[in-house]
Amino acid sequence: MSDHTVVVKLRQAVLELASTSSEGLTISAICAAAGVSRTDFHSAAANPIQLLGEALSDELLSQLAQAHDDMPQGDRLRISLNHVSRWSAIYQGPLHHELIASLQKTLFAALRSTNVEFMASHPEILPAGVRADDEFAITFIASHMAGASIAAFAHWIEEGDDDIERAIELFRALAPRHMAPLWNRTD
Image (cartoon, rainbow, N blue to C red):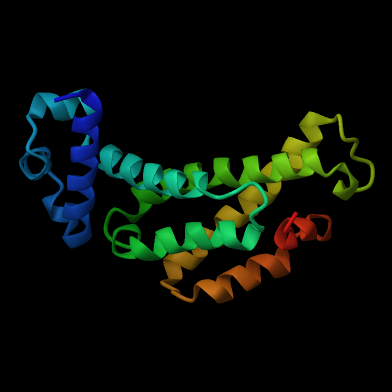
């Protein structure tokens, strides 16, 4: 069995087990559900929580990678919110704190990248005083915006709110004016 096949089987198994109960997240249970050995497990992951975090992050990144370049930011956020909603029992469960860190890292990178790319390709929307060739300033602004979004995501998860459209409208309302085209673009 190839390394890739082992990883896929382990990730599917850990997601299935975690969706029913975090108590079943032992290496033995995951290996049995995946049909692989403990050696295979240890070649793929350090522990069950790391495996679960990677499985969730990879699924989200895979979904975001399918987004087309001109997709409005609200639709990109909807992908992320749907992912969190689908796995809400896991994200809100006993492993909440361990998994939130993995989700935040994944979302931060995705949101910052989207914001940097958009500002770089639309220099006319940059805030006053920020030049189009100032990569540090653009990344700084994109990081600030992504960080604020991550805090809002964490609140949404902790509150157990399942109204995705309301969350998107709140994100839209808080977006800086210079980023409005990112929310409405159809180019």
